[in-house]
Image (cartoon, rainbow, N blue to C red; front, top):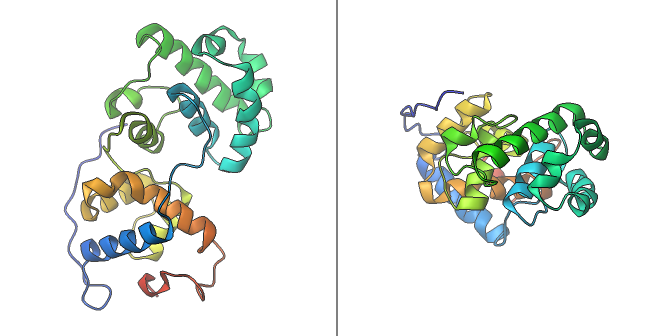
Length: 223
């Protein structure tokens, strides 16, 4: 996948004369008060376990992933365990996860690459991560932020996609274009946390079927 070229956004006035840059700062400030301990919901104890959990989480709830990885991580304790286990056996161990065959194949292929080409350590750059099977920008951003403390972009999951549109921070529907728009208006220091703040907000207050009557940030919604 090609790197995203940053394009300028017009400073549109969409809420009482507020620019998108001003609006996103206020939203982040409010969210930080609502969720002071916001963080990734996936359970893991090593960078490689995080990779596995993130790949498994595609189109699957974090809650279900944590159920599956509880047993999985007890069996597969090292990267070598993933490398040495036959694909069919590994796929069987994750069959409670949707799309388990494709996810299992990606995890196994990446385990081989990381073991042989990177001395067992996940790459620490967007460019190298995107070369790994099953890794898109969302996964790469999650790994870089949580493992290496790097912010090269903003992870856009279903909650971020929905709320960014709801708050009028983007008009796009493609995750890569939404990421580009958010990067343009969000201070870089907040790129990592905005993902988890929006996820927490979407889960607790503003679900997909929300009527927005009791949402703490309902005033920021574009009608």
